[in-house]
Image (cartoon, rainbow, N blue to C red; front, side, top):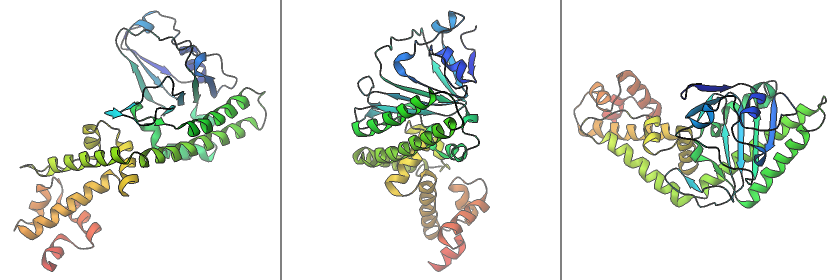
Length: 310
Protein backbone atom coordinates (compact mmCIF):
# COMPACT_ATOMS: atom_id res chain seq x y z
CA UNK A 1 0.00 0.00 0.00
CA UNK A 2 1.36 3.46 -0.88
CA UNK A 3 2.19 5.74 2.01
CA UNK A 4 -0.20 8.45 0.86
CA UNK A 5 -3.15 6.15 0.24
CA UNK A 6 -6.31 7.10 2.14
CA UNK A 7 -7.62 4.34 4.38
CA UNK A 8 -11.43 4.48 4.41
CA UNK A 9 -13.21 2.98 7.41
CA UNK A 10 -16.93 2.51 6.77
CA UNK A 11 -18.03 0.09 9.48
CA UNK A 12 -17.52 -0.42 13.20
CA UNK A 13 -15.94 -3.79 12.40
CA UNK A 14 -13.32 -2.19 10.17
CA UNK A 15 -12.55 0.39 12.85
CA UNK A 16 -12.08 -2.18 15.60
CA UNK A 17 -9.76 -4.19 13.37
CA UNK A 18 -7.65 -1.16 12.42
CA UNK A 19 -7.19 -0.01 16.00
CA UNK A 20 -6.75 -3.46 17.46
CA UNK A 21 -9.95 -3.35 19.47
CA UNK A 22 -12.02 -6.41 20.41
CA UNK A 23 -15.03 -7.13 18.16
CA UNK A 24 -18.13 -5.06 18.93
CA UNK A 25 -21.26 -6.81 20.15
CA UNK A 26 -23.46 -4.67 17.86
CA UNK A 27 -22.70 -4.17 14.14
CA UNK A 28 -23.49 -0.44 14.23
CA UNK A 29 -21.95 0.68 17.51
CA UNK A 30 -18.90 -0.16 19.58
CA UNK A 31 -17.65 1.19 22.88
CA UNK A 32 -14.35 0.15 24.42
CA UNK A 33 -11.94 0.95 27.20
CA UNK A 34 -9.09 2.89 25.66
CA UNK A 35 -6.62 0.48 27.22
CA UNK A 36 -8.12 -2.29 25.05
CA UNK A 37 -6.72 -0.71 21.89
CA UNK A 38 -3.63 -2.49 20.59
CA UNK A 39 -2.86 0.40 18.23
CA UNK A 40 -2.81 -0.32 14.49
CA UNK A 41 -3.07 -3.83 13.15
CA UNK A 42 -2.80 -4.08 9.40
CA UNK A 43 -2.29 -6.64 6.72
CA UNK A 44 0.66 -4.70 5.33
CA UNK A 45 3.54 -3.58 7.49
CA UNK A 46 3.97 -0.40 5.50
CA UNK A 47 0.75 1.01 6.93
CA UNK A 48 2.20 1.11 10.42
CA UNK A 49 5.54 2.63 9.49
CA UNK A 50 4.72 5.20 6.82
CA UNK A 51 2.54 8.27 6.75
CA UNK A 52 -1.13 7.41 6.73
CA UNK A 53 -4.50 9.15 6.51
CA UNK A 54 -7.63 7.49 7.80
CA UNK A 55 -11.12 8.63 6.81
CA UNK A 56 -13.48 7.41 9.52
CA UNK A 57 -17.02 7.38 8.14
CA UNK A 58 -18.48 6.97 11.60
CA UNK A 59 -19.32 9.22 14.50
CA UNK A 60 -16.62 8.79 17.11
CA UNK A 61 -16.00 10.11 20.59
CA UNK A 62 -12.69 9.82 22.42
CA UNK A 63 -12.41 10.36 26.16
CA UNK A 64 -9.01 10.33 27.89
CA UNK A 65 -8.32 10.47 31.59
CA UNK A 66 -6.58 13.64 32.72
CA UNK A 67 -3.51 11.85 33.98
CA UNK A 68 -2.46 11.11 30.40
CA UNK A 69 -3.68 14.24 28.64
CA UNK A 70 -1.72 17.24 27.61
CA UNK A 71 -3.46 20.46 28.61
CA UNK A 72 -2.44 22.54 25.63
CA UNK A 73 -5.26 24.00 23.57
CA UNK A 74 -4.55 25.91 20.40
CA UNK A 75 -1.86 28.47 21.15
CA UNK A 76 -1.74 28.41 24.95
CA UNK A 77 -1.91 26.21 28.04
CA UNK A 78 -5.35 25.28 29.29
CA UNK A 79 -6.39 25.86 32.90
CA UNK A 80 -8.31 22.57 33.45
CA UNK A 81 -5.82 19.72 33.82
CA UNK A 82 -8.37 16.95 34.00
CA UNK A 83 -9.94 14.67 31.39
CA UNK A 84 -10.66 15.61 27.82
CA UNK A 85 -13.10 14.59 25.10
CA UNK A 86 -12.88 14.94 21.34
CA UNK A 87 -15.77 14.50 18.91
CA UNK A 88 -15.44 13.49 15.25
CA UNK A 89 -18.08 13.48 12.52
CA UNK A 90 -18.22 10.99 9.64
CA UNK A 91 -15.87 11.79 6.78
CA UNK A 92 -13.20 13.59 8.77
CA UNK A 93 -9.64 12.57 7.94
CA UNK A 94 -7.18 11.66 10.69
CA UNK A 95 -3.49 11.70 9.84
CA UNK A 96 -0.28 10.42 11.39
CA UNK A 97 2.85 11.61 9.62
CA UNK A 98 6.51 10.68 9.74
CA UNK A 99 7.99 7.39 10.92
CA UNK A 100 5.00 6.52 13.02
CA UNK A 101 5.26 3.91 15.70
CA UNK A 102 2.18 3.10 17.73
CA UNK A 103 2.64 4.07 21.37
CA UNK A 104 2.13 1.69 24.25
CA UNK A 105 -1.31 2.71 25.47
CA UNK A 106 -1.99 -0.28 27.68
CA UNK A 107 -1.94 1.98 30.74
CA UNK A 108 -4.11 4.74 29.25
CA UNK A 109 -7.55 5.03 30.80
CA UNK A 110 -10.58 6.37 29.00
CA UNK A 111 -13.16 5.38 26.42
CA UNK A 112 -13.51 5.19 22.67
CA UNK A 113 -17.02 5.15 21.23
CA UNK A 114 -17.86 4.78 17.53
CA UNK A 115 -21.22 4.38 15.85
CA UNK A 116 -22.55 4.33 12.31
CA UNK A 117 -24.96 7.12 11.26
CA UNK A 118 -27.58 4.43 10.58
CA UNK A 119 -27.65 3.60 14.29
CA UNK A 120 -29.38 6.91 15.09
CA UNK A 121 -30.94 7.72 11.73
CA UNK A 122 -34.57 6.93 12.66
CA UNK A 123 -34.35 8.88 15.93
CA UNK A 124 -34.59 12.60 16.65
CA UNK A 125 -30.90 12.43 17.55
CA UNK A 126 -30.18 11.62 13.90
CA UNK A 127 -31.26 15.16 12.99
CA UNK A 128 -29.99 16.88 16.12
CA UNK A 129 -26.44 15.56 15.86
CA UNK A 130 -25.87 17.34 12.55
CA UNK A 131 -26.42 20.65 14.35
CA UNK A 132 -23.84 20.02 17.07
CA UNK A 133 -20.90 22.14 16.00
CA UNK A 134 -18.39 20.55 18.37
CA UNK A 135 -18.23 17.56 16.04
CA UNK A 136 -16.35 19.87 13.66
CA UNK A 137 -14.02 21.48 16.19
CA UNK A 138 -10.32 20.89 15.75
CA UNK A 139 -8.59 18.31 17.94
CA UNK A 140 -6.84 21.03 19.93
CA UNK A 141 -10.26 22.44 20.80
CA UNK A 142 -11.20 19.39 22.81
CA UNK A 143 -13.55 19.55 25.78
CA UNK A 144 -11.50 19.77 28.97
CA UNK A 145 -13.44 18.52 31.98
CA UNK A 146 -13.31 19.05 35.71
CA UNK A 147 -13.29 16.01 38.00
CA UNK A 148 -17.04 16.31 38.57
CA UNK A 149 -17.78 16.60 34.85
CA UNK A 150 -15.55 13.65 34.08
CA UNK A 151 -17.43 11.54 36.64
CA UNK A 152 -20.73 12.34 34.92
CA UNK A 153 -19.41 11.39 31.48
CA UNK A 154 -17.77 8.21 32.74
CA UNK A 155 -21.08 7.15 34.26
CA UNK A 156 -22.88 7.57 30.93
CA UNK A 157 -20.11 5.78 29.05
CA UNK A 158 -20.37 2.88 31.49
CA UNK A 159 -24.15 2.74 30.95
CA UNK A 160 -23.65 2.55 27.18
CA UNK A 161 -20.93 -0.06 27.62
CA UNK A 162 -23.11 -2.23 29.86
CA UNK A 163 -26.12 -1.98 27.56
CA UNK A 164 -24.15 -2.65 24.38
CA UNK A 165 -22.69 -5.81 25.89
CA UNK A 166 -26.05 -7.30 26.82
CA UNK A 167 -27.90 -9.60 24.49
CA UNK A 168 -29.49 -7.48 21.79
CA UNK A 169 -33.26 -7.17 22.24
CA UNK A 170 -36.08 -4.86 21.12
CA UNK A 171 -35.13 -2.19 23.67
CA UNK A 172 -31.36 -2.19 23.34
CA UNK A 173 -31.03 0.41 20.59
CA UNK A 174 -33.61 2.76 22.12
CA UNK A 175 -31.80 2.73 25.46
CA UNK A 176 -28.36 3.30 23.95
CA UNK A 177 -29.59 6.17 21.75
CA UNK A 178 -31.21 7.81 24.77
CA UNK A 179 -27.89 7.55 26.63
CA UNK A 180 -26.06 9.03 23.62
CA UNK A 181 -28.49 11.94 23.66
CA UNK A 182 -27.81 12.56 27.35
CA UNK A 183 -24.05 12.35 26.72
CA UNK A 184 -24.19 14.97 23.98
CA UNK A 185 -26.45 17.24 26.05
CA UNK A 186 -23.84 17.22 28.80
CA UNK A 187 -21.11 17.87 26.25
CA UNK A 188 -22.98 20.99 25.11
CA UNK A 189 -23.31 22.14 28.71
CA UNK A 190 -19.65 21.55 29.50
CA UNK A 191 -18.46 23.30 26.33
CA UNK A 192 -20.54 26.33 27.32
CA UNK A 193 -18.88 26.23 30.74
CA UNK A 194 -15.49 25.99 29.05
CA UNK A 195 -16.15 29.17 27.11
CA UNK A 196 -17.41 31.06 30.16
CA UNK A 197 -14.89 30.00 32.78
CA UNK A 198 -11.88 31.18 30.81
CA UNK A 199 -12.67 34.91 30.80
CA UNK A 200 -9.07 36.14 30.62
CA UNK A 201 -8.30 33.87 27.68
CA UNK A 202 -11.56 34.74 25.94
CA UNK A 203 -10.90 38.47 26.35
CA UNK A 204 -7.47 37.96 24.84
CA UNK A 205 -9.01 36.13 21.88
CA UNK A 206 -11.58 38.90 21.43
CA UNK A 207 -8.78 41.48 21.40
CA UNK A 208 -6.87 39.49 18.79
CA UNK A 209 -10.06 39.05 16.77
CA UNK A 210 -10.67 42.81 16.74
CA UNK A 211 -7.06 43.42 15.79
CA UNK A 212 -7.47 41.19 12.76
CA UNK A 213 -10.60 43.09 11.73
CA UNK A 214 -8.72 46.38 11.96
CA UNK A 215 -5.82 44.93 9.99
CA UNK A 216 -8.09 43.88 7.13
CA UNK A 217 -10.28 46.97 6.99
CA UNK A 218 -7.85 49.72 7.91
CA UNK A 219 -5.38 48.97 5.13
CA UNK A 220 -5.11 51.10 2.00
CA UNK A 221 -7.23 48.61 0.14
CA UNK A 222 -9.96 47.18 2.30
CA UNK A 223 -10.81 43.55 1.81
CA UNK A 224 -13.98 41.69 2.75
CA UNK A 225 -12.77 39.20 5.33
CA UNK A 226 -14.56 35.92 6.02
CA UNK A 227 -15.04 33.98 9.28
CA UNK A 228 -12.85 31.21 7.86
CA UNK A 229 -9.97 33.62 7.25
CA UNK A 230 -10.16 35.04 10.77
CA UNK A 231 -10.40 31.59 12.35
CA UNK A 232 -7.33 30.51 10.40
CA UNK A 233 -5.33 33.49 11.65
CA UNK A 234 -6.38 32.66 15.23
CA UNK A 235 -5.49 28.97 14.74
CA UNK A 236 -9.05 27.88 15.52
CA UNK A 237 -11.82 26.11 13.70
CA UNK A 238 -14.49 28.46 12.39
CA UNK A 239 -17.24 26.85 14.49
CA UNK A 240 -15.25 27.00 17.72
CA UNK A 241 -14.43 30.68 17.22
CA UNK A 242 -18.04 31.47 16.40
CA UNK A 243 -19.35 29.65 19.49
CA UNK A 244 -16.71 31.26 21.70
CA UNK A 245 -17.60 34.77 20.51
CA UNK A 246 -21.32 34.08 20.86
CA UNK A 247 -20.87 32.99 24.47
CA UNK A 248 -18.65 35.97 25.24
CA UNK A 249 -20.48 38.76 23.40
CA UNK A 250 -23.82 37.40 22.19
CA UNK A 251 -22.72 37.65 18.54
CA UNK A 252 -21.05 35.07 16.32
CA UNK A 253 -18.14 35.76 14.00
CA UNK A 254 -20.24 36.77 10.99
CA UNK A 255 -22.35 39.13 13.08
CA UNK A 256 -19.20 40.82 14.40
CA UNK A 257 -17.90 41.27 10.86
CA UNK A 258 -21.21 42.74 9.72
CA UNK A 259 -21.34 45.11 12.70
CA UNK A 260 -17.83 46.32 11.95
CA UNK A 261 -18.66 46.81 8.27
CA UNK A 262 -21.75 48.84 9.10
CA UNK A 263 -19.79 51.13 11.42
CA UNK A 264 -17.15 51.64 8.74
CA UNK A 265 -19.87 52.35 6.18
CA UNK A 266 -21.55 54.91 8.45
CA UNK A 267 -18.27 56.79 8.88
CA UNK A 268 -17.65 56.82 5.14
CA UNK A 269 -21.20 57.98 4.40
CA UNK A 270 -20.90 60.88 6.83
CA UNK A 271 -17.30 61.97 6.26
CA UNK A 272 -16.81 61.53 2.50
CA UNK A 273 -18.58 62.30 -0.75
CA UNK A 274 -18.09 58.76 -2.04
CA UNK A 275 -21.09 57.20 -3.75
CA UNK A 276 -22.80 54.17 -2.23
CA UNK A 277 -21.27 51.97 -4.93
CA UNK A 278 -17.80 53.34 -4.25
CA UNK A 279 -18.19 52.70 -0.53
CA UNK A 280 -19.40 49.17 -1.22
CA UNK A 281 -16.35 48.43 -3.37
CA UNK A 282 -14.06 50.07 -0.83
CA UNK A 283 -15.39 47.81 1.90
CA UNK A 284 -14.72 44.76 -0.25
CA UNK A 285 -18.21 44.02 -1.54
CA UNK A 286 -18.23 42.60 -5.04
CA UNK A 287 -21.88 43.56 -5.53
CA UNK A 288 -23.08 46.97 -4.21
CA UNK A 289 -26.63 45.63 -4.01
CA UNK A 290 -25.54 43.20 -1.31
CA UNK A 291 -23.97 46.04 0.69
CA UNK A 292 -27.13 48.14 0.46
CA UNK A 293 -29.30 45.18 1.47
CA UNK A 294 -27.08 44.40 4.46
CA UNK A 295 -26.98 48.05 5.53
CA UNK A 296 -30.76 48.37 5.45
CA UNK A 297 -31.19 45.07 7.26
CA UNK A 298 -28.96 46.26 10.11
CA UNK A 299 -30.01 49.93 10.31
CA UNK A 300 -33.56 49.95 8.88
CA UNK A 301 -32.39 52.61 6.43
CA UNK A 302 -30.77 52.57 3.03
CA UNK A 303 -27.28 54.09 2.86
CA UNK A 304 -28.66 57.22 1.14
CA UNK A 305 -31.44 57.58 3.72
CA UNK A 306 -28.86 57.36 6.49
CA UNK A 307 -26.65 60.01 4.82
CA UNK A 308 -29.55 62.43 4.32
CA UNK A 309 -30.93 61.96 7.82
CA UNK A 310 -27.61 62.57 9.55
